[in-house]
Length: 356
Image (cartoon, rainbow, N blue to C red; front, side):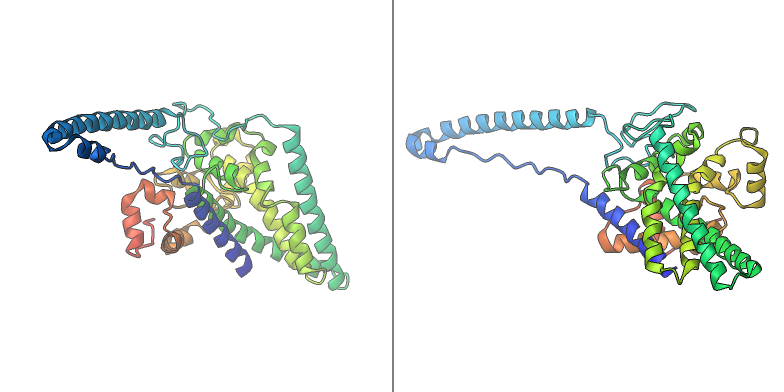
């Protein structure tokens, strides 16, 4: 599991690096220098005061023109419509520079995104889950062979692996959610659209409830899809079917986490009875627990599979510790810090625990 944890931390750090790398630097304005020394030497001493006065007037005029040009350019840049690609995109909230509809209106933040499910999305999701099911079934058959056909032992082992995967998937969903909420933007390579979608979700959280299943989860098929589990299967080899089974289930749950997340934003009357049962049993993230995450500065309750790990992670200050390490390493601040200076100050003092 240390390899998964390490790779996740690296992903968060790389996202933060991308955020810094794509932040444009402010242009420096050079001072205006006089060009009258030669002229003064030619005119002689008797015209010295006159030339100086002319130079002062000309310089003042040039300075005024340049300042006007700078102010105009600044105002023009201020009026340019920002998009999800900008580093100023802090959750798409008021003050982020993005225009968004008021009230409970569906709003998509990624250019080209839509609430309509497309055949391509259905194909990607169907193929991904079929691939995960194939690797899971193959792993269970290998386990059955290793147990000399003992169905009971194979079932017990498989169930244990699946439960362990479900628990770690909740932890993984929290780390993933924290990383894309706080670091990177739409320009971040590979993960840009996912980052923009997660961050923009805070400006209109109900939008997710308008999405069909495939439209909602297909983006997560990119990091948790067939190539990922196929690579793990090759590395693990046929002699370690438990590893392949663990990660096949893990990746499938991570993809499903976005649908579990959607259910937590829907009322009981909008979801089937079995969804409400899963939430009541704590198998799926509930409405009240997840609502705590949607309180600014969005600094906790990141886990969205079952929420089982949220209390331990927030009480221990795990994510604040991670943010402090990243800041010490490359100077990039989390979005939660930008929204809450006091949180930033507490974290830099080493006070990582969140009040529960």
